[in-house]
Image 1 (tube, rainbow, N blue to C red):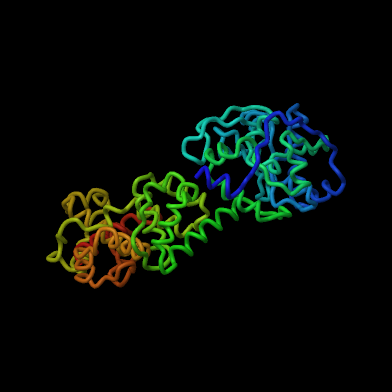
Image 2 (image 1 turned 30 degrees about the horizontal axis):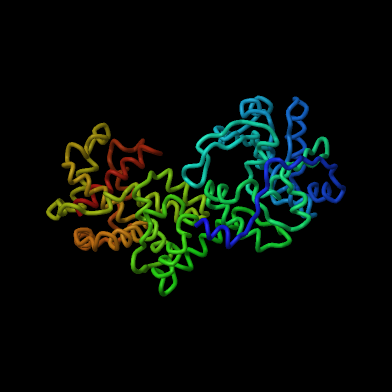
Length: 438
């Protein structure tokens, strides 16, 4: 990997001894910033911080883009005010990453401005985020950033641009340069390598942010999954030392990949990521897939599968082919007093039968089609599940005529006043019993 970084990018080092530069903002620079429809928010936030005696500057890509005469896509404010001090200054705030010094200031029109305290990052252990941060000053904050052209600051009150790492010269020369030692910085955060490839291919530094990098990564992985010789492609990715930069700490769990992939793209993604997904928490799965810019549908599917894996797999024989008919169950249910509903399942059914009720309920969820394709690919076809669904004339992933209705429930003499959560809870219990007994 070290050789790859040196030969593929040849990015030189900027030493921390570069003298800072302070230059007045030009009219063209100010014009580019003020074209943004949310510029008034920046003036409000920075003005209030400055009036309270704090340093408040724009940071990162917005300064770079403005110097190129391009209206920034968004703005980030950096300050020496601590998160607690930011919260005291503004009537409404949202703490989205307070431990990293990040506070969001919302506006009445639904817009927001992110305010981050200047910081110095601690050690990196996961190849993505620092273990600790230490609040610092403007210069230290510049030195923690990835590339010199992204480490520029602008004070919108004083109309001054600050450069601590040579970003202005590199922007003029269209040179991509890492802040600090390139090898060390890429080891800290592996996505910097992908950002470097992106920026190096854009000689005029057109607007392009981290979202595009993540989308490109996702799209390239999808294309590889759908290719005829996908296993060979992933093998070459690993052999060339790119598995870790692309998949971070999931790489050792993902590789070696399956010999083949089938199904639609979401099923193939599940098959690729499942060895990692099953070993981490649902929150971690959601965070990682969101960072990689996968859509909500796939993220919800992966998390749902992880949470329900054991119930989606039938590990015991179907206990209920001889149970009462749906008609008899409805008749019995209508006579059941509501007061005993909460514990009725526990009284009438064994633990194994209740597990089967849960499994049957999950198998009728639309997400079960893709989830079960993954589980069958990994563990073999679940013959118990197939037999249980066939016995009940239920199609995997579909809620058919077996479902009870609110009318069935409300025919109970004591259920006339049920509504909202109570109605939903009772109806779900009825449907679970119908599924099991059917």
